[in-house]
Image (cartoon, rainbow, N blue to C red; front, side):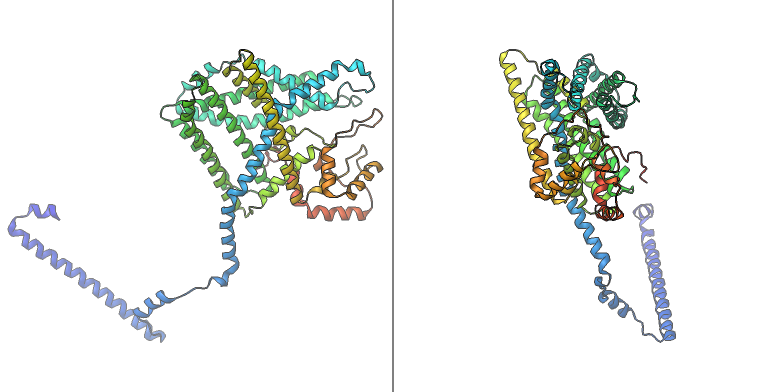
Length: 552
C-alpha cells in the first residue's frame, strides 16, 4: 500500500483513500449479510425441528459441558500405569546394568588374577605327576586342561599382537575422511557382534574336544586344528577391537569433534532401529544382555584411549581433565539412549518394569549355579554365552596397550607391579563375594532356589540313580539357606575310574526333559512347569539363542 501511495500525486491520494474506504465498507456489509443468512437458516431449522436454538445457548453449552472419566476407568488407569512404568524404567534398568557390568568385570578380572594362578597349579600338577603315581586315568582334570588352554592362547596372542603397529594404525585411520570413518566404525560394530557369536562356539568346541572322554568314537577333526582356530579367532578379534579403540581415539583428538559427535549420534539411530519393532520378554532379555556387554566394552575402550593419550602427553595429569568432558559425554549419551530405548520398547509392547528384576534374577542364577559342586561350566564362559562378552580378546588388547604405554624399570617399578597385582586380586575377591551375596538374595526373592538342587542327570536319560535321589531328599530336609550355602561352599568331587561317563547337560536341559515314571509324576511336573514357565524361558536363553529369529 505504501509503495502504491508513493507513485500517486498528492491530489490522487485522497481519491485512493476514498476508494479503499468504500471497498472496506462493502466487505463489512457482505459479512453481515452472510451472518444474517446463517441466523435465518438456524431460525428456520429451529422452527422445523421445534428446537429452540440460539447462539448464546450454544456458547453456554460449550463453556459448561462436562465429561466423566470414571465411565472409562480401565482405559485411563492403564494409561497412568504406562506413565509410571516409563518413570520406573531408568531405575530398574540401571540396577540391571550395574549388576551386569560387575558380572562382566568379575569375568574380566578373572583373566588377570585367578587364571594365571590356576594355570600355575595345573602345570605344577602336570610336572609333579610322577611323584603321586598314575592312580587316575586322566593326567589332568577337565578344568585344569581348559585353564592351560586359555593361558596358552593368551600368551601366543600377546606375542602376536607385538607385530601390530598401533602408531601406524592410528595415522592410517586419522588420514581418512569423517564420513569414511563413520562407515568404518559402523562396520566394526557389526563385525564385533559376528565375531562374538562365532568365537564362543570355537572356544567351546576346543574345550570339549580337549576334555571329551576318550572311550567315545572320535567325531572331530582333532585338538590341534581346534587350537589353531581358537588362536586365530582371539588374534583377529583383538585386532578388531584395537581398530575400534583407534577410531575412538581419532575422534577424541579431532579438532572440531565432528567425528565424536557423529559417533554419538549413531547411538540415537539405534533407537529408530529397535523401538518400533515387536519385542517379547525373551527378546528384551537378549537386548538387555547385549547392552550390558556393549557398555562394559565401551568403558574398556575409553580406558585404552585415555592410556594412549596420557602416554603421548608424558602422563601429564592436566591432559586428563581435557579428556574428562568428552568421556562423560560419551557415557551420558550411552545411558540416555539405553533409557529411552527400553522405556519405549516396554511401552509399545505392554511390558512392565518388574521384568528387569526377573532378568537380574536369571543372571544371579547363573552365578550361583556356577559355584555349586556339580557346576557344568566356568562362570566366565556362562557370562560369555549369556551376554556375548568374551574376555580373552579384550584382555589381550589391554595387556598389549598397558605394556607398550608403561615402562617398568628398576626394583621399585617391579614392586609397584606386584602390589598392583595383589590389589587386582583383592578387588576380584571382594567383587566376587559381594556379587555372590547379592545373587543369593536375588535368587531367593525370585523363589528359584529349588532349581539349584535338582538331581544331576545320569548316563540313563530317563532314570535317576538312588544315590542322587537320596542326596536330593537330604537337601530338601535342610533349610533353604543352609542348603544353598552348603552347595556353594563345597568343592567338586572328582569321579572315579569305574564311573560311567555321563553326558554333560545344562540346567535348562533338566527342565526340558521329564524322567520316565508314573503318570502322576508327569502331571505334577507339568503343573509345576506351567507355574515356572516365565522364569524357565529366561534361564534357557543365552546371547545367541534367538539371534537368528526375525523380530518384525
